[in-house]
Structures are given as C-alpha cells and as structure tokens.
Length: 127
Image (cartoon, rainbow, N blue to C red; front, side):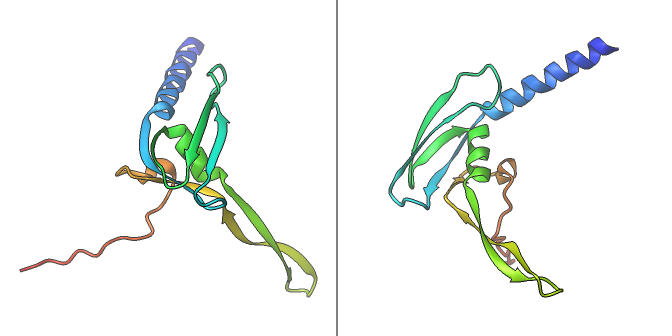
C-alpha cells in the first residue's frame, strides 16, 4: 500500500514538473521601468538547474508555465494607508497593490496563469 502511494506521488510530481515546463506565449510588461529590461534567475524544483532570464518591456516571448506564473504573482508590492477603525483608533491597511511587472498571456487559456478575464465580449445575433 505504501509503495502504491509513493509511486502515485512520483507520478504526480513528474506530471507537475512537465506541466510547469510547458511553454506559453505572451507579452512581458515592465511598469516600473518602461522600455527597460528585467533580469532574474529562476528555478522551480529542487535539483533543476538555475536559469537566467532577460525580459524587455513589451517583448513577446515564450516562457515555461512556471516562470509565467511567477511573473503574474510576484511583481507587486503593497502601499499602506493609515485609517481609523470603528473605535476611532488609527490602523494601517493596504491601500493598493502596485504592479512592478506582469506577463500577459497570448494563449487561449489564461486560467493556467490564475488570471480572470476582465472583458467578456457581448455576442449579438445577426438575422
């Protein structure tokens, strides 16, 4: 029984590694430095080699899904504001999150990147 669970975990882990290595096409946006280049090292799984990425603002590129997800979720920082709570005491709250950079997928399925479509077109029937 324990061997079957271990084999299933290894199979699921290999599936996840393969999924994160799939290439997705998209456009990189660097809001912090328009026209600039972002350089970073990335490794998703232990034992994998560290890869260096150079992405320029507005560049169309093909990246592994794991890197694309990282770009969609990591490039934000909060700006805190001071407000009064219901008792009149000052408290700090997150006023807004500022995006440093993002990756806009050109693939059909943005669900993979954890994004929701903001615009849903209205379809009208022509008779």
